[in-house]
Image (cartoon, rainbow, N blue to C red; front, top):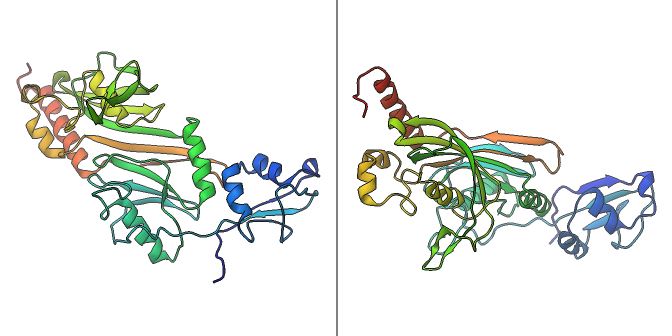
Length: 329
């Protein structure tokens, strides 16, 4: 069977790089990791200079054409399933999807089908693309919003490095009980697993550094609920949900970190939670430097229907209060 490759990464050797080793050149010019380079070395046409296969310690001359070819891969372990995907952006390197609430990103124990991965793999199959599912980051099952998926190993490596370096912009919208005492601020509190319940995260001095920036966008019900914009500086599991609970502002609909039943009743929450039936959290904005275009790109996902309904209901209450139609407490 003939080996199939993705479009090659290529560069022409400049005079200042004359005599440089191939390995050093592609690490400096393209940012190729040593792990990926090791994979390319094992591929017949993985690393070529002027069309000829070379070793990574061979030296190049000014004007040489250096090309790196990655073998095409498929996610054969993921069952393709038709799914109505909300595709925000796609090119040969990237796919940005607006994930609806209620589905997980990748198959796990108990979730082998009906995941975002199943739908994306089917989408690529329909397009005739041999691509492996490589998400750059994940969202909780009940969190809606933008997910970035790399379409080859190089893009995955580059974006993972941007994510680790804090160079990926991710902002969220959340609807919470109460309103922060300080309208704009930062929660800088370490997070780790709850020793009594490994699925739950808690704020603890022994935890991992965790930083969440927040801004109060709107207040409802005389401060009994609010809309918050959040930006993550770190990416711990359940970070926003844990930090907002720590502020005394748990997310509406959050069954894991939300208020106990008496407090929910006091907040007038049953009808609000009935509107969303999940934590009211949406990954609204995603931005990073495109590894191939070398330019900043940013995307925005509009609110899903349930959160729009929730906001409309809260705003309508505010309007009624302002017009004197509802007696204020």
